[in-house]
Image (tube, rainbow, N blue to C red; front, side):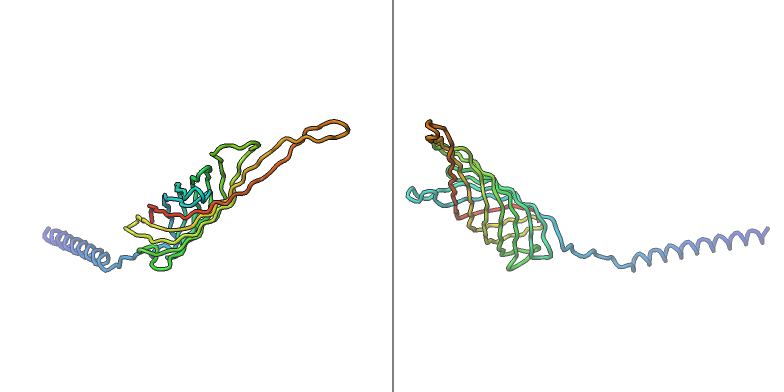
Length: 215
């Protein structure tokens, strides 16, 4: 009996010491394992909502016009300085309303996507247009045209939020189409026909804008 009792006592001591040793090894292995950090992404998604003023003149004899411009831009930042996106806007001019869809490309001259930055940007696209002023005789329809505006500004970074102020110059082309009835003397009688005219108009505006975005 004494031998059996000693056997069980020795077995218990061995099991306890082995368990304690295993726990110590696991603890040490966790303690010495370095914590790896994933590298920063080279491509990040961003978006911003932009609002601003368009300043210029349709008829400079009547003085300057001040109207509004808004846009929503979604895109990606590539590396630390390049941004590319797609924008959808809504612009108001005296006598016209346009809805441009455009591509946007910007470069951080000083700073980068993780800090405050001074940037330059080019936007190019086309716009749908509606004429809001008095419809002249023979007016048939209105259409938009190409839109381009370069700008420069300063972006302020606060964690994932961004605010920027910018100054640019927007050039928007629109078209008005007119149809007029005509009468021609053919084979001894008058026959009615139609003549058409297209009026192209370029609206050039100084643009002051502010935007609030994410990343």
